[in-house]
Length: 89
Length: 389
Image (cartoon, rainbow over all chains, first blue to last red; front, side, top):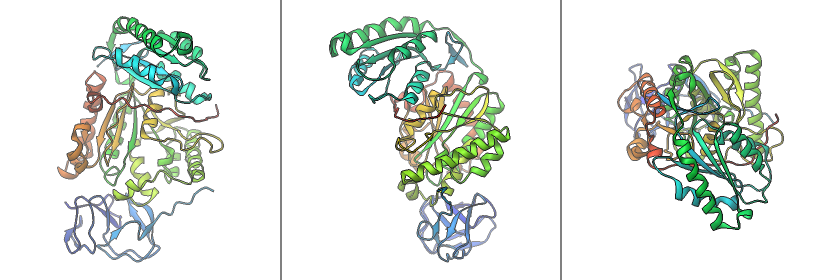
C-alpha cells in the first residue's frame, strides 16, 4: 500500500513512501490515481479534485480549506490549503 | 509487578534520590553531588529550578516532584539568598516520610564544603532508601501520562491512535491516565466537551482550550512548527486531530493543573496553559517541561510519541518513546522503545502496537529500563508559570 486513507469520506490520502509525479497508485476503492506532483512520505495527495474554498477532509473531519483548485493527484500542503480555525480574539 | 512502598502509602516503580538546586547559582554544587553519588545500585537524579524570583507554581511542582512515588530521598541545595521557600520544601519532604537534607551554600562556606556536605548527606540516605520495602503493584496503583513531540504526518496515523487504544485499556484496568496539551487540541473543543464525565467537566475542558487559544494568539504563535510542516502536516486542525488521538475515547474525569494529583482513577486532561494575562512566555518551552509536569501530577512513567525523533528521557519518571515514523525508527532505533511505524511498513494493526505497549508498560513498571534510561537520559526543565487556585 502506497497511500493510506484515514476515513472513506476523505478527499486526501497520506503517502506511505516517497512517490513521484507521473506514478500510478491504487486507492482503497480499487481506482487508479495518477500523481501530478512528487508526494513525499507523510504528505497528502488529493484523491479527487478539490475546488477552491472546499473543505479538505482527513480523519473524516475538515483540516482547512483549499485556497485554489486542486486536481486529483496533486500535492495538498501549505501552497493550496489553509487553516479555517478562527482564533478566539 | 512490584513497586517501592513509601511511608505515605504511594508505590513507586523506581527508587531514586534526587538532588535539587533552588536557583541556578546552586546548580554546579548540586551537579557535583550527583556526580559523586550516582550509581547503578541507587540512581541519584539532578533536578532544579533556575529562577531567583519566587513562583508559587514552581514551588508547588517542586514539592510534588520531591514527594513523587519514585523518589525515596531528597538533597536540597540552596545558595541562601534566593526566594525559593526551602524550609517549606524540606518540611514537605520529611512529612511524606522521605529522607531529606538541605545544604545552604552561603552557610557552608562555599563550593567545596557544600559539595562535601551534600555528598555525605546523599551517602547517608542510600542505605535507608535501599531498604524501602517492595510490594505488589497493580494497575490501580499506576498513573501514566502521554505527551507528543516532533510530530509528523505519521504521528496521527500510528503512534498517537495506538497510545489512545492503550489508554482505553489502562483506564479499563483501573489505572489513572493523563493527557494534555490544550494548545495542541485547538479545534477539538466541541469533541472534548462531550467527553466530560459531567457537563461541568465538559465545559471546563472546552474553556481550557479557549484559554489556550487566546494565550497562544497573544504569544503570536501556535504549537505548529516548521518541522511539523516538513513532516507533511499543513494546518493546526490537522495536527490537533492527530494529537487528540492519544486520549483514546473514555470519559474524562476531570481537568487538572500541573502538580495536581488526580483524585480518582480514570482519564484526566492536564491544563498546562497559565491563567490570567499572557506574561510568562510560552506555556511549555519544550517537551521536557511537559514531561516534568506529568511527573509532578504523579505519573510513574510517560508515553512519549515522536515522529521526527526525540532522544529525550526524564529525571524521576521513565519515558517510553513510541516512534510513529518507520524511517525515523530505522535511523534512531537505539532511542526508540516501540516502533509504531510497523503499522505502515508491516501492515500491523493499531491493536498490535497497543498490545506491545501494554506489555512494555508492565515490564518497565516492574523495573525494566527504557531506552532513554539505559542511555543515561535524565532531562529536566522547570520554568515560571501562574495558575489561579
